[in-house]
Image (spheres, rainbow, N blue to C red):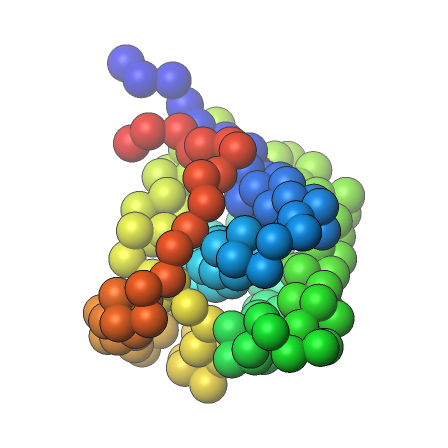
Length: 193
């Protein structure tokens, strides 16, 4: 039997990848290197948010964490708007560094709150089997959600968001291909499912 996965570990992989990417972005001196890292930051923050909403938050109520899910969805809406601004901005503009910094900072403030205040509650509320199930749903969702932010799409985590996500993912792939977007490798990897 395969080892059980921990949903909080899989969520934290994304948080830590964004932390690492942002450090790499700040250290980069070449505009093209910064562009590729920024593309990756936007992609990872967008995928993470939608994946949590679809695969994790809607289960919180059954584990007694319904208020936490609503709070997180509200914070995600703010993150998505900031990430959308970064995705829409021209990296060659003089204020791009502040725009991407706002997006990442908003994301990381939410991530820190999850890690410090919510992970222990999640771990207490879930059996190892429930955590494994959510982790696998989260990892599967990462392969089906849009790769760019869509803050005006449904944020319910239900069928409407899943349907919009499938359509958004196709749209995002076309945009990324037409624009020739490139991405950097991630430092950390998720468990294989």
